[in-house]
Length: 448
Image 1 (tube, one colour):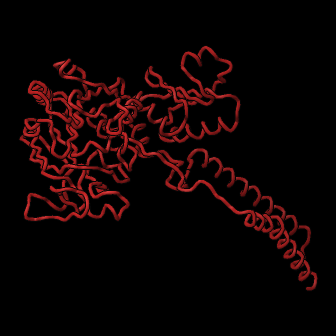
Image 2 (image 1 turned 180 degrees about the horizontal axis):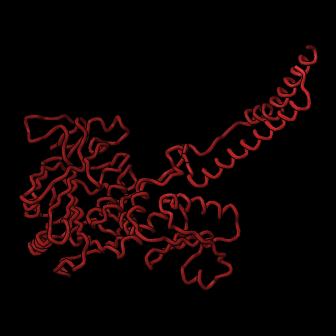
Image 3 (image 1 turned 30 degrees about the horizontal axis):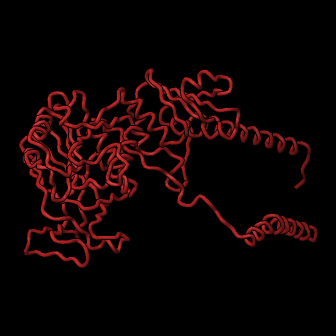
């Protein structure tokens, strides 16, 4: 085919038209990507995406959020803060981020108590919280506290050998108390011998495993509190010595004799059968987002027959192979059907609620207090469960505990030999392959 000048001009026009259309297509795609951004997270555990807990919290926050980052002109640090804020902005566009150099504002930094480069100050509805070490957990905890509007006060009953919310002993709840403070719940100790009434404004009362009988006056005070609509967390124990049978009767709760045991516990790496892993939860706001097992120790099984007007919801249930062991749990154990022992799926945690004129009254009864103790708080979902219980009791259903996210294996360790092989492949092997293939293509074309 002979190509003359007119054909050349036509081909040139076609070429220009193709370039114009191609450029227009690229421009439209770029405009669409800015107007309708699409992002995917392929990281392990979706750790670069906000958790469901954070998304739920943001959905319930009306009004703008202002975040001020006190960070020096460090590009890496500021980019990390932008990425963190961007994850929140994708779910709440009215969250704004501004940067200030702390060296230029020493008085303001001192006033806010900021001591670390890169700390954040989060403002919402006229209140502010500082975040010293930015991350999703610390950021969401700050937003939780701001969204409450006011701090909730939870009273922990003391004076009868209960677990202390500020105690440092293994059986105490000091670590749990500090975690409550992080999300805006203030744990206070209440001794009814010194203060005969439960203070007004108490969001919830916690009875954490008393070791001595409560006097009749204290029991009546607790009963009056429940009757008047107070929220309660009761951490029972096997062979409970608290003398709180009137409270159990009022709630329709019966602790079955014995300790719940799981014969498969040793095979799961647990030291004794009295350790009960709870992996299946009831369909309740407290447990719906729990993704890992809770570990209970020396647990009492519960039988629930809620009184008229109360609704009961299952929270925790023991494994199907468990039973209530009434004898010693050391050594060889077996289920004895000829005794009062019960086997199968046993209720070890329940939530009770009833409608009130002001707000729904809520109670939680758990057959174990060890899972929140300083020794066992870090096991599985123990902390998440405890925080969820207190959030639900204080009427903050949306403020659920947020699990930490981490890469399953963020480090890649290679031997020197492997590194040398990779370097040879990418620095020598691949370039040589391209050069040889190019030379062969040129050689065969010239022979045609």
